[in-house]
Image (cartoon, rainbow, N blue to C red; front, side, top):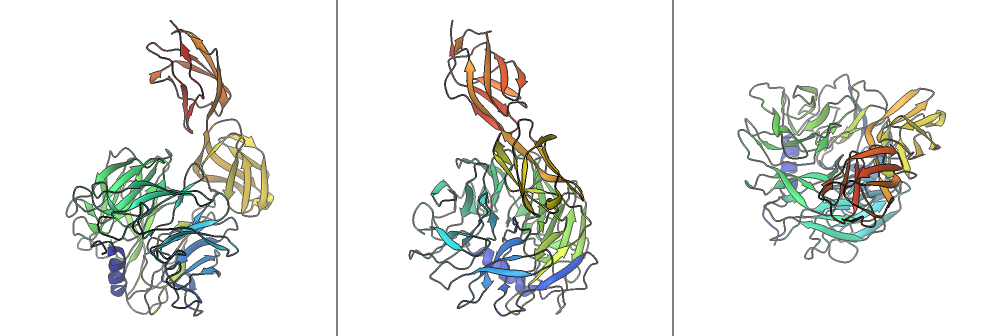
Length: 553
């Protein structure tokens, strides 16, 4: 028997879409690039939680929960260019095979795209899959959910790339007593359930994000102290800490849908579909430690008729530091808006949809993506009669480069997405020059140099492009000398990526130290130290020694 409320996402979306008979006079910055269903086999009905990812070729990759050329049109994986030209990569087979992808797609370090289906399988379990698809359309099911086992069922969000190169995701569960799980899957398909939600720490978890501290962050739609959802942190081992229990109307949010967005300073931002001053949703912020929670904006059309209402998808932090998002309702016609909000809470509408049959689509329910050309892209959800479009939102933001992964050891590869790379003359990490290889005009790789973590810059004939996120050099400790010594003696620790060392410990005891170079740190054995491993900490992580240092009398 299905747990009551587990398909609230689908029911809520359906109600919102029925209410949103929308479109409108396009804002000067809003442009419809392509009307989906122009071809009968086109992708249709993009999902509110459908992640979009920029590919190595500069196209944007995602999924639709309907459309395609196969029976019953059970969804597609597809790509589109910055001008709106679409290519279907895979048309999903009808049930009982893998079908109905709500997830969107994540780009892996191997160049493949990873997503999930909410139903179907290749083994008869018929409760969802994890899959990968190439840019050429080669499709592989990597894992079939069991429904009754530790992996539960019904994955709705795409897995995200972890700092270790593996993929981490969630499934929401479908049966009584199932509240959702978090899992890890390797690019080769080895699957492990790493956390089982228990309602107290959330029910129905959606997409994770990888934080700048290497932990994962996310929201669960329900559960927690008030059964109104939670914000949580999760380690890569699956330890979950609830950061906030939503309390609902009138002072807090309720029913978060989508996922979080993280700014460069670490602050997390998100939305709730309900709650707030008039119970039509909120925008909130919170720190990775759980402190500083605040509602930045109450969606409230009684104060301003042009305000949005009932956001259903994630926001994106753009390169100007502001957040951009969508609401499924609100605006003067009560048909949804595109909005911008500053980290300080200054809110403005950028485009308002209308409820008549207008040309700009309706149902702005999907998350937006900022392409490295600076422009924001998104899709409207539409309904069974149409109204789903691909659009761009031009805020005049400058081009930049994007990093596929943001952690790596000295000597490993940095994958960089952008444009104009055919004329690239230099690549730097944290100001340190490094070797690089141009693969195409939109994709290059660089070698992690000895030196500091920092932003990546690429110099081209068109100017210098900077990354939107910091790349972190992961430290390694390869040895130390001498192997033993008393408190107060000096120990030389060798390794790589040590130039930004900010902490050295002998077991649990903090030591005084000097950074000699990127490959060497000298530390003093601290008072109270016992025989134990030595650990060096940098912004890129922790590097424990392989063997213990022996503390002598």
